[in-house]
Structure formats: C-alpha cells, structure tokens
Image 1 (cartoon, helix red, strand yellow):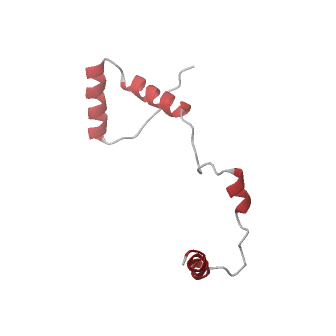
Image 2 (cartoon, rainbow, N blue to C red):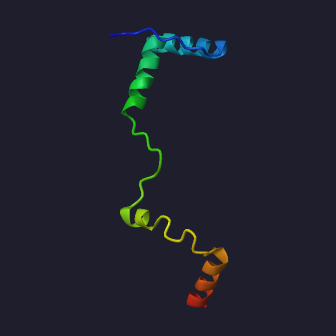
Image 3 (cartoon, rainbow, N blue to C red):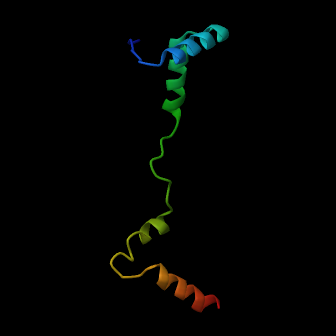
Length: 80
C-alpha cells in the first residue's frame, strides 16, 4: 500500500533533488523510498557492543573512593 508523505524542505534542496531525479530517470518519491529502504536495513546501534567481561565490571568501583591519582600511583609502583 502506498501512502502520501509530505516533506517540508528548503526550496534549493527540492530543486536539486528534482534535477538529480531528472538526470537519473527516477522520481523524487522513488529516491526518497530508496533512501528509506537503505536505512531500514541498517542496524541501529545505540551503544557499542561491550564484551560480557567488561560489562560485568561496570560499577564495581562506585563509591570506593578510587580516583585517577590512585591509579597513577599504582602504575608508577608497578612499572618504575
């Protein structure tokens, strides 16, 4: 089923779309439909996938009073 969709766009953008459509032998509606087909098939990722091990560590130091200074001191002791 086809349904009408109204878009509000800048006049110059509409002119460019119509010129491109004429050059490619497609309608502006077909170009918009093709665009929506492409994005429909893309995977939308809100957050990068985090491995389970890393995910299990989230929040383990919350409220422990550990800060960047403590981490730097640890690294100095370990490697120097």
